[in-house]
Amino acid sequence: MARIILITGANRGLGRELAAQLTADGDTVLVTARDADAAAKAAAEIGGDAHPIQLDTSDQASIESAAQKIAAEHGRIDVLVNNVGGIFDYGQQPSSVDLGKVQDALDINLFSAWRTTQGMLPLVRKAQAGRIVNVSSEAASLERMGPDTSAYGVSKAALNALTRSLAAELTDEAITVHSASPGWTATDLGGEGGRPVSEGAASIKHVVNLPTEAGTGHYYQDEQTLPW
Image 1 (cartoon, helix red, strand yellow):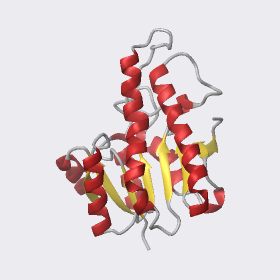
Image 2 (cartoon, one colour):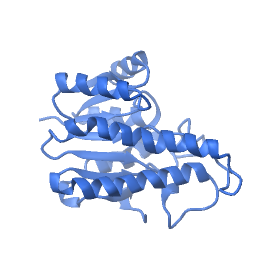
Image 3 (tube, one colour):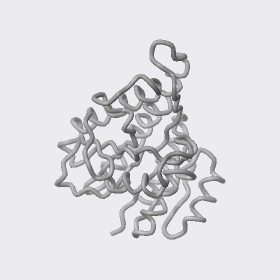
Image 4 (cartoon, one colour):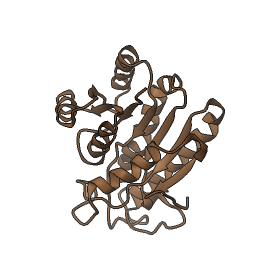
């Protein structure tokens, strides 16, 4: 039976590439975007068993509507990939960063995933072995954290904390939760200096495909664990 995988922000960049890779492997991928037309266009171009879903991770009503649609059409979610993210504030150090930018980073990098997870968890619970993958960053590692990109790094570290907390809560329900870093990737967010999007997506795909025996509550990049 094909897995049903929901990817937020899948109309471009890493989300779109991940959707294409997973669809090519035979998974059923729910391609979401804030704009319904963007989701439909991306799903049509990806082809295979890709299905468009309008989903704005900042809007509770949108999440609830998407969950109802998925329940009616698919019945469950095997893997939820919280991919939406942004606010890469390079050069902004914690002593001087605009705290409004920090709030924006927390909204998109933490609360979007948290809100979506709460809305989709009933569907993940219907899977035989559900999984939640939070797309994090190597910049979120507390052990490696430097002074630059303070809003982004702190917000992604908070996302990692959510990963650990959810993993602890859901361990008895056979739902695994991990953080996946794509590394520095040449997306609109990462800029031109990063590696190919296909490689960043493959780093996330590895976490999507981990065996259940790998446990829960881990933080990966390129098939290796990162220090929290």
